[in-house]
Length: 245
Image (cartoon, rainbow, N blue to C red; front, side, top):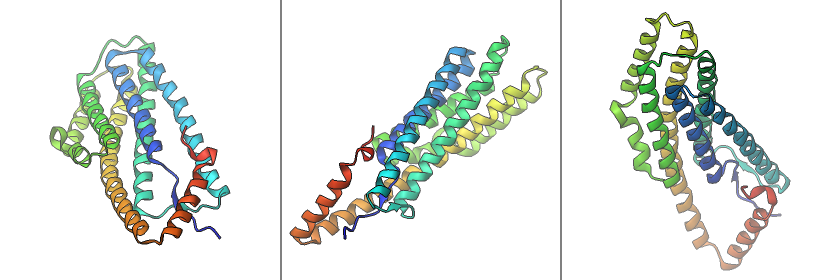
């Protein structure tokens, strides 16, 4: 009987793709608000289509593992940190979509007022999301550790979001409800950026530990057993759905 190792449902390529999509959605939505742009709001819709394709790919990967009899890892620190990153990025993308939807409503009613505090806070959050993406792509732990230190850290950003809300509550704008929803989404993206950074740190630490254990295990196995193990892994890798598209 073949003894397959446990496999992570979310590969590194899945996380990178999700990071790219969430960063794109956040960037489009924040700029759409600042520029009052309906066109940028529509661009967020294309990101949602790409997200659906990614989730189909992840589902295919899981079904291929099950068909091959390969157990899916759901409990290791690597699997948990991967899910933590993906979930945070997914929440970010959802919040960015809501920003785009509310901005579209405001743009359709020829909004004339741009609230500076909201725009400034959005720009600050956009920087955090970009830094998370770079840390993930470069696998650079020092960049992930830098995220909670940017512009005074989480407490400073929470204060900025709170001030943006107060700024809106003092206004008599007829579309204040949409503006408040946008500010709340910006705050949510900020929280998820910090969560993503912490997940990246855990993911990198787990990846390095897993690589160290795997290297030591392979080096202590007899040559014949090593060949059999590599052959088994190669057989799984040939399954079409396991190859990221």
